[in-house]
Amino acid sequence: MQPNVTPVGLNNVQYLYTPFTTNYGGTTNSITLVSVTGVTGNVKCALFADNANNPGAVLGTSAVVTNPVTGNVTFTFATPVALTKGVQYWWGAGS
Image (cartoon, rainbow, N blue to C red; front, side):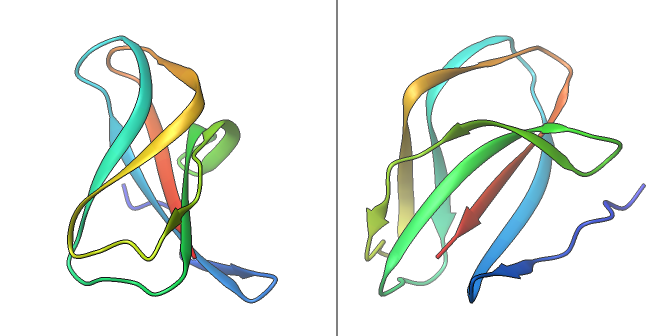
């Protein structure tokens, strides 16, 4: 089933949402994404609960990463986010 979500602009900011299902339960205090190109500006990441195959409630928001480079970019959450094994969640990133 394809998600019902496409990137949307909020206050002239682009966000991208992608679903994922966890293989393990526990908490996470960060998410690492692979950037295929560097970005000039500020980027944040958030984790969302699933709501009928769409991003739902915000579970955690990362600190801002300024001018992320090509390669691994780690987004750290101020408060760890609890994840349950086998459950679909969404991550979103925006600049």
